[in-house]
Image (tube, rainbow over the protein chains, first blue to last red):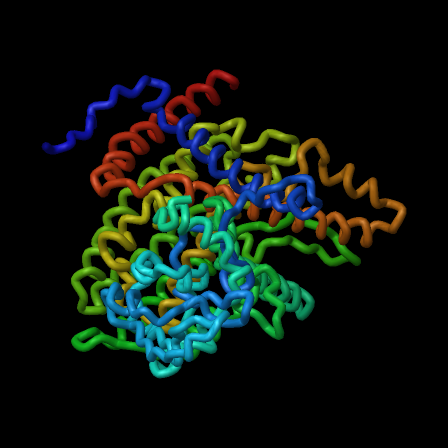
Amino acid sequence: MAYYVNRNVKLTWWERTYIPEIIRGMLITSRHFFKNLFGFIPFFLGKKKEREIFTVYYPEETVQFPIAYRGRPVLALNEHNRPNCVACGLCEIACPAYCIDIIPGENSGKQNEVERYPVEFTIDYAVCIFCGFCEEACPEEAIFMSDQYDITMLDRKKMKYNMKQLLVPVEELKDRMDFCRKMYGKWNY
Amino acid sequence: MWIDLAITLAKIVFILAVTVGFFAPILTWVERKQSAIMQDRIGANRADIMGFTALGLFHIMADGLKMFTKEDFIPQGANKVLHTLSPIIALIPALLTFAVVPFGGQYEIWGQKVNLVISDLDVGLLFVFAIASIATYGYVVAGWSSNNNWSLLGSMRTASQMISYEVSMGLTIIGVLMVYGSMKLTDIGAAQESGYWGIFLQPLGFLMFFTASIAENKRIPFDAPEAESELVAGYFTEYSGLKFGMFFMAEFIEMVTIGAIITVLFFGAWHIPFLSTATLISMFDFLGDSFANLIVMLIHVGVFFAKVTFFIFVQMIIRWTLPRFRYDQIMKLGWKILLPLSLANVVVTGIIILALE
């Protein structure tokens, strides 16, 4: 169904003289001009919470992303200074881009020891599509999407992050963890 | 004689410094920054020297450097001579019009009469129109000689638009000439000292002249000749480097010229309202006659350029407020509205002048 624009708008005589309407338009633009020209002063004096202009100076300023934002996936490092990961390989299978590469290792199975752990865990960010399937697939709350997105390198090989680079303390991922529990309902909280 | 020559040279240097040296570069910055602020953006501020950005003022230098170092490209099949010549033909008239525009009154400083206009022609206003219409050649030749269809289309539009609007522009001025009875721009300026500004005597004439002069300058909303979204860049599509810069500069200098002529004709030239030159001089009388004259001269020049700046600002606001006219709308406005209205303005002005006598 086509959308028809009504072009036969009836203008009043006053509007058809153009001049008052042009002046009205100019008043709107100059109001914005003067508001923005002096609008930053109360902001810097602390009298106003928000800026009038919302442009962000990117490298110096960054935007606070909502918790649902999917940045680069990271591994959680728990309080025992070990990764949460048990090297089950579910994320590896779930990954549609095949960017995850895990080499598992086994422990002896003594008390206070996880049986399996990742010897090496590699994510190739040049291949990763930031879909978040790994996070959804993970049964151990080991891999999470962070809010970092600016991974730019001149060398493609450097985009392959090993486990040391991937590990992030679990305290920093608290918010995302709560969000995931709510979202995916894994533990039926 | 030598002193006269020196004074004339000083005036020429001053005008060149103000237009080419100050207004043209500053306006490139103002246009960016003002439009940005108007549209709730931040605008150019990334060019920096040792970490100082100075509100993006260094972009002017960056622009100049870019234009100087760019390749000066002449397309295949272009007429090399005319392609090189046309930016000059476009730029020079914009500067030449300033020869007759007075930027101050007449003062007597240390026995030397100083008339703040480079050349006080009796046919000043006619000279302005004659020179301004030469610029049309620059734009038409630029489009024709670059062997490009967009350019040619742009220059055709330029020709038709400038010729159409020159007619109504000339006719709107007749009202002003009738009121002040002189073509000398200095006389017109001096006649407005008592507060009888052109805007009060010729309000319709002012609106029409302003419209026509924006159309002459080919700025938005009359920018059909260089419409980015239709014709790439119109007549200067094939220009690069400093030649493009000259077209760019011509546009900004023309803005200053329009502002100056409107100030002289309609907004009391260099005068401060309700403050005549004699009162001003008597205010500074304690400094001695010559010093008082000198200070009043500086004040008048400052007032004049403040008014010019205001009109440039208004032109910029119009640019960022109104969308582009369609081509048939431009022609309709020029021939069906402005021309009859300007003729009617002449008739009504004549009747009123006769009735007052």
